[in-house]
Image (tube, rainbow, N blue to C red; front, top):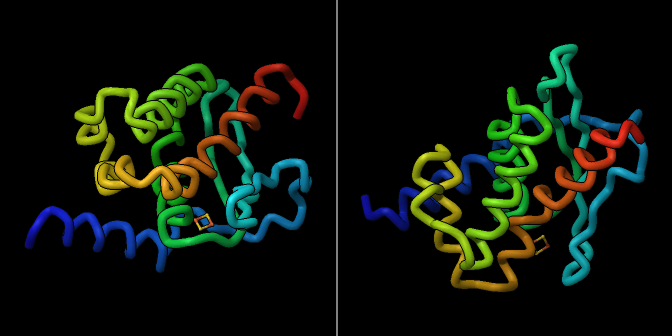
Length: 147
Ligand code: FES
């Protein structure tokens, strides 16, 4: 199986069976992030444990395969990190997808490597980073004690 096919399989698996996809009716609509280019949106909930580490990341919303798969992968990637570690990872991921970071790092981040090819498609970069921007905003507000 070619790498492209394998990556496609990974993306479709996360799209069809998104991890940590949940009903989030109790979560404030302030946690909704929209992709202005298409109107798709994602709602995010991040819970911190008593040790200050991320206990769970759950999401809801609608979007294309890339945006849902990326959100699903992100929920797995951020669990267990401190807010500082998570913000650093989000920043690195967004930079890589914009073609500014060290893409080889994706290979160390499990299924995220499947999004490597998105770098070539600027429109798709917005899809793949939608949940990550939402997580960044939410974590920054949590670190300020706002939610
Ligand atoms: Fe809307 Fe990808 S087309 S998030």
